[in-house]
Picture 1 (tube, rainbow, N blue to C red):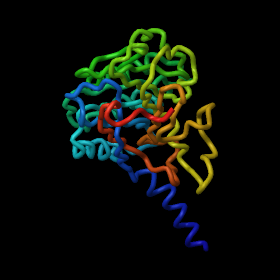
Picture 2 (picture 1 turned 45 degrees about the vertical axis):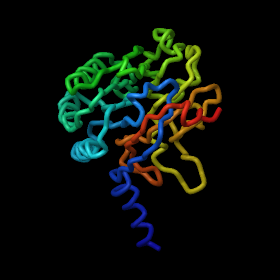
Picture 3 (picture 1 turned 60 degrees about the horizontal axis):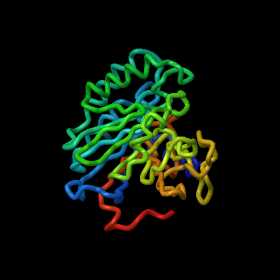
Length: 275
């Protein structure tokens, strides 16, 4: 019994936190341009570059993305766990492992990217600078057109930077669209207009530990439905929560770190997501 317990502890602290799972899914998008059908979008989140996460593990994980032959990269925040300026040097080194993306790379910021108490905008500016230096476009309540796919990036909720009203026209447009937002609780706020489509998020780490047949005991969200994976909001929006690559504590059980590989398909051909 003691050996079994020791093995479980060793797995939880030493194996699963670095055992990355590549989750492959279709991403049906309304009015998707035919030229984007079959293209691959990689979604990563919550690297938490800093003292808790080994940089070599993150570098190896990002380098592995090249084998997925990606076209678009989407990052949904918490690039760092800020303790001091050394995190920017670490972040530059980690982001240097990103492969080239044929059509582009975009990101939004998370609460930890805003430093202590989510209240240090200078930290967020440095994180954004490092992303830009690595060829990643940072979206802060703004939208960008990626070869006919409108990607809308909303800034962080806990840092009080989330403002969907700044992109109301884009959210209400019925052309091919996708939203990035770090904290899934943001989908329950006002300001989404007529948006119907996918929202990619992170923040939860999937709860990091999930007992069999039970929900994770600790989740940093108000809406306890928002754990991981695909969740229908019921109004035409569908949430996908990535479990993240990093951690705040090096512990995971039944919640492996995740790289999501989406294949873009036209919703009209695939069928609408469930309401």
